[in-house]
Length: 126
Image 1: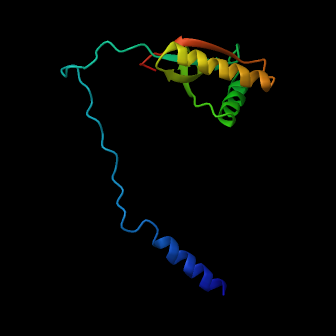
Image 2: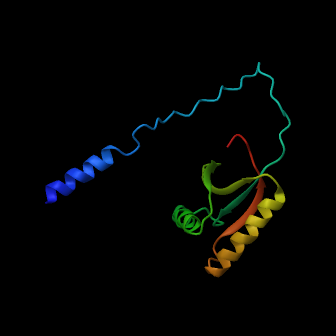
Image 3: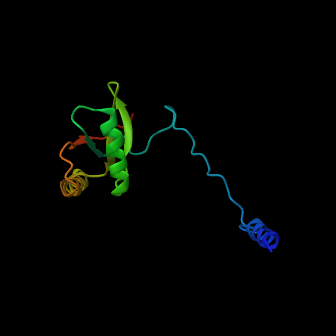
């Protein structure tokens, strides 16, 4: 009986996605200096830097785990040899301030007093 159940499961899984083709994402052409750039003056974008004031590695790992648990998307950049945790980029400073207020509210509710946040201008080279 067990062999029959396994055989049925294998056959069912083998037919999953049959007839569906998956196309690889198309690569965008690289922008070179000879190509004209549309919108050469980009609008400012904003990030929210979050972290402990002393950049402790253990505190950053705890912070990123907490951010994931509470639904905050982040990325990590290295600035002057130290890791910074950033939320964003946000199109406007008002969006960044709204996210900062939400973060502060959730941090206060969780009684995490060892975390600071600061709005900074987004750097495209990061």
